[in-house]
Length: 253
Image (cartoon, rainbow, N blue to C red; front, side, top):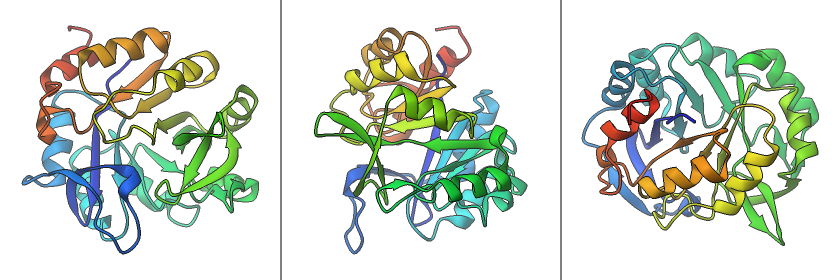
């Protein structure tokens, strides 16, 4: 289990936002707006040898800020938000270790296999991460797209994950029902992913304290990496210290 840091970008700034509040024409619910630029956080993660974190562009107006972060930690960060077959290679050329894709692959409520094939051809399986951020709907976890506003018919189950694993090297899974709320993690989802995920998988959503990290380790059978957002002190939180998470990543905490 590894700590994966994050840089969430909204309107060119590093922010911590309740993901489910991202809607067209409305200001999202925001917990934190950084005074420091994206490169500051990227340089921090590079200093502490924390590869595999993700930069997520939450809407338009973030390309310059994302490129700044990637340049500060070349080969150390993944990039997501508006990634498609048309621009995946460009972001890899700008220094991204991997590209993260969701809405391009899941369209009109279902998996778009032609687009999956196209983005694999553009980025390569070994540098592609599929974002399977999901919510519990009618008793099953289904992938959510378009800033988590649209539910697909694609359930998080063993057969589906094994099929997708043939096309990518990692999964990123935000638990959208708890993401950004600092009200606790989705233990049921963590247990499911620990049982069925066939490739490296990062869980995100609701982590608020060290006890939550320990639950991820136990319920996920030590197989899942994790990320922390609003609870982290570098993002204005009080639940977890960044230094402690960096030390955990390095195996010394």
